[in-house]
Image (tube, rainbow, N blue to C red):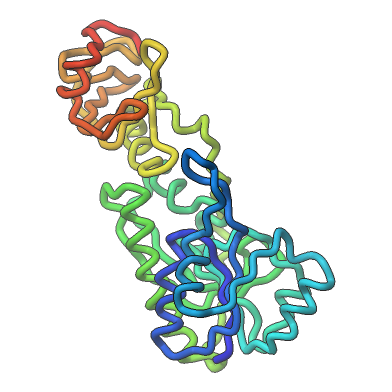
Length: 300
């Protein structure tokens, strides 16, 4: 098929690779514009843009798709279908209508649960035991379109980074399977019950909340690994917590209970297993405490 691929982050790269590997004609790739990155704040292309350019595919990085010129340029591609995976821009109706078979979305949840921007992190934060990938026919609503296929995956204590990589692989395999059966594959409406929304992650949400249960705090750690990184503050420094475990313990929430940096929560306690000071590498709590003491009894 003649395809436009629309995606931006690492999650979308396996899908692009799968389309190329399956022999589809990828007429153009759309990605978010390059962003400033690193200490020098030089513009850095997204992972999808970098991969497409390496494959010799035309890349387009419009700020918006609402202008008539952009929409005309999209129509001129004469597409069979457009595929979207974590692109980051709203597709106006003229874009949705342009491909012969419409636009399909690779969405990282089992719809209708976790429609929206951050389904992987929200699933972890909510304590879901299972998530997955849904291939959906796109329409004007937010992830409301009929479903063509889905595939489950276990959350099973994974970080957001680990789960993202797993779901990216599932999505890549699933979309190739779906394309092989289009247009004969029938779509089914999403159930009306069980709808939840995965709002965009805000940086302040990564501040560890010790007032709830240790299980909830541990889910914060996993949901924000690798970015933006769950953290607490002490002595004017922000300490990131990359991994932790919920353990038995009691005390005022936020109190350091022992020399292993175990922290009391509203229910149980959180024991970090990998932490990081600003400008340093990740390390075990014992290594952190040798150079940066946080005494027992400290309130974080």
